[in-house]
Every structure is written in C-alpha cells, then in structure tokens.
Length: 52
Image 1 (cartoon, rainbow, N blue to C red):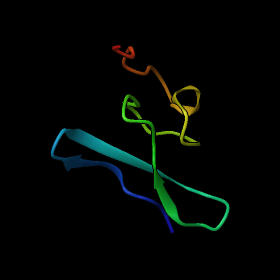
Image 2: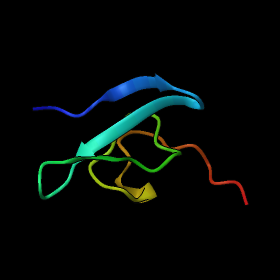
Image 3: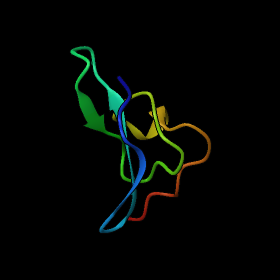
Image 4: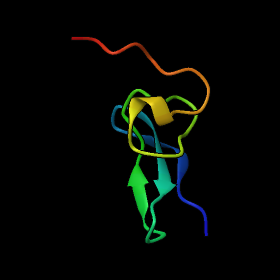
C-alpha cells in the first residue's frame, strides 16, 4: 500500500514514506512534496529552508 501524501494537518500538509518494515513514517517537517526517508536531504523537490 501507499502512505498518506499531502494530507492536511494542523501545520500544513503531512507527507509520509514507507520504512523498511513497510510502516508509514513522517517525512522531515520541511518537506513540501514528499520524501524517501526521514531526513531533510530525503525530501523530493524543494524543501523549505530550516529556521534556527
């Protein structure tokens, strides 16, 4: 199956990816188009800049 992709959450769209166990895990919060892993570098397309 597929994981939720762009489901509207409290702080904007939520993207998730399937991990090695095929469980849906959240993408980095700055990913705007989905991801292939949990890190900022795993985002598909452009990511929002990280604010510090």
